[in-house]
Length: 137
Figure 1 (cartoon, one colour):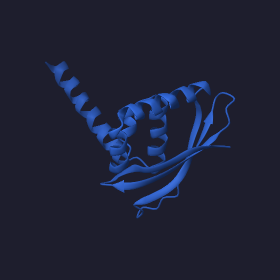
Figure 2 (cartoon, rainbow, N blue to C red):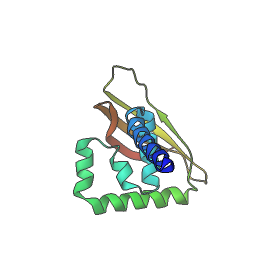
Figure 3 (tube, rainbow, N blue to C red):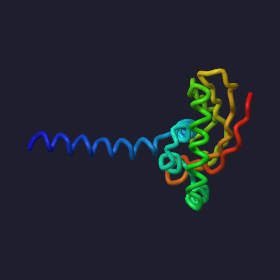
Figure 4 (cartoon, rainbow, N blue to C red):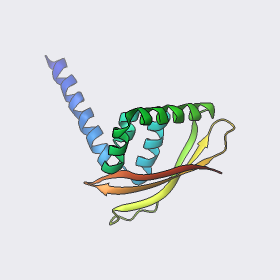
């Protein structure tokens, strides 16, 4: 019985850690993780980082969202995967909206790209409300 209590306690700790970690993420971390989620075609995780309006647009057309994520995953794989994702956001504690970009560098021979992102703080969480097309450098 003691083993079950330890397992239950660890499960509760894991759930609490995941719940808290999302709330403590910076705009750069949200942007980086969103790009990683897309590159692995993890639609549910990617959508959890979107603001309500953008999320509802994705949910209206789930096949399109899955297709776009699968296409992005294939593109990243063709480039050898990410070497680095470097977010660039200037954020002050009082801000509730921030925009910036993430620099995407690949392990293969593909050129680096920039991804524009705008985020809003919603109930303590930074959520993506707009992201622009990738720009090759």
